Image (cartoon, rainbow over the protein chains, first blue to last red):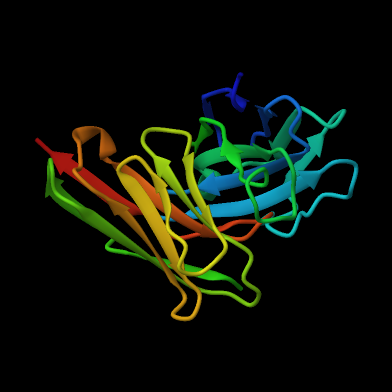
Length: 118
Length: 108
C-alpha cells in the first residue's frame, strides 16, 4: 500500500513569511508525528497526534509553530513568521497504534519537506 | 530528558566487510529501542528492541539490546554498496529521541 506522503518536497521562502507543510499518513494509522532534521543534528520531535486525544505539543520550539490534524487523517504543520533557523527537513511519520512497544507501534516516515528560509 | 548517543559517527568500509554500530542511551523509563536506515529521504524501519539479549535478524542485518549496560548494537555482515546510508537509533514509543546517526559508506 501507499506510504506516508508529504508535500511540497521542497519549499523556499523568505524570512518572515508563513509556510504550511502537509502530511498524508498511511491509511488506517491512528497516530501521526512531526519531526525536523537540521544539518548536523538528529531528528527532533515536534508534535504527536493520537486519535481524538489532545496532541502532545511538547516538542514545538516556539509559538510560531502549530499543527492540525483534520478528520483523523491529513495533518498540516504551520510555521508563522519564518526565521532562518527554521531551515531544516520536516519529517512526518505515522503508526498503526501508539503508546506501546511491540510491532504495530513502530513509526513509518515520509520523505520529508526540505524548508529553506532565505 | 532522554539521551541517545551513537558511535562511530561515520565509517568507510569495503564491500564484504562486517560493520558494527553502537547506540548507547540514558533514559528515565525504558520504552523501546528502534533502528532506522536513512538513505536519501525517508528513514525506513529496521528493528524494534524491547528485551535484553534477544537478537533480531533480517537478512544480513541483526541487532541486540543490553538493558543492563544500556546499549544496542546493529551488525551488518557481508556489506554491499546498497548498505551505504545513515543508520539512526531512537528510544521511545511516541515521541522518539534520536541519536545523530552512524554514517556508513561501503566502497566497492
